Image (cartoon, rainbow, N blue to C red; front, side, top):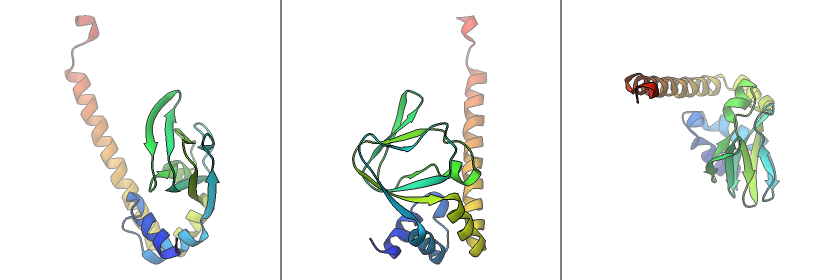
Length: 154
């Protein structure tokens, strides 16, 4: 794929949707391509996040503890929030087929944000929207739990 096509693929990720195409091209150019064989760990739950992985081809199962919580397909971005915040990966992703991924490490992300301030602002705005939606979902769930009957009433 060309750098432009890779940058356009990155634009499909919600946190990059409104970012400057030039900043995304720089990130796409500098990202390291990595290949994973079936069964190899792409990200490991509980490990310090230094990178996020953009799946370019292949698929991976997403696991929380022992529970399979989803399947990552091409276009998925794994570990981005943990990479940006320097947190631990919240889930594991294990390749189920041969996977090619673009690895974006924290240093690259911060370098692009430093050189293209509008990129950083766009990502921050997208993360703020994501956080706001998460808080609304939690409030909705809390409301349902408050309305639900207690198990002791059964």
